[in-house]
Image (cartoon, rainbow, N blue to C red; front, side):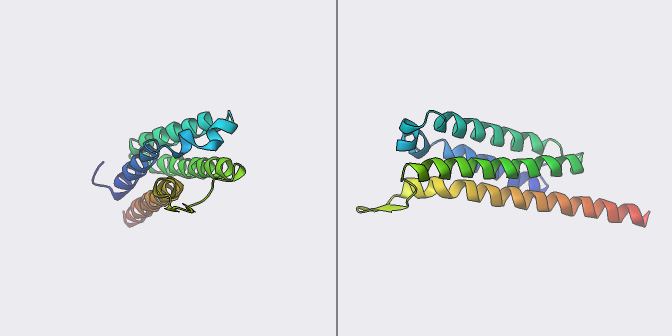
Length: 141
């Protein structure tokens, strides 16, 4: 299970999403104070996406199902990014810098959903390669 590269990508994607919870930007931002839906939405999407990706690791025997679940995880990651960016945009805090310099914490939080999406895409590509390999081996028999 851990020998497969898509398992590594899925685990890294889960860790990237979990790291998002360690930053204060989504939780103490003006969007969190202005909109009551912002924090529960971001927290729910974080937990749901990371949990589904973690569960997808254990579907390694059913590759086509795993591919479908990882595709769903990619969509959830896009929804998470949309909610995060949308909430920050509507409050005017979707910025990387202020007059004092670069806001590194905010920059990292804004990049983490993109990194997670790329990792989940790489995992799906690995799963598709496995499916193609098994199908080619079945043709040889």
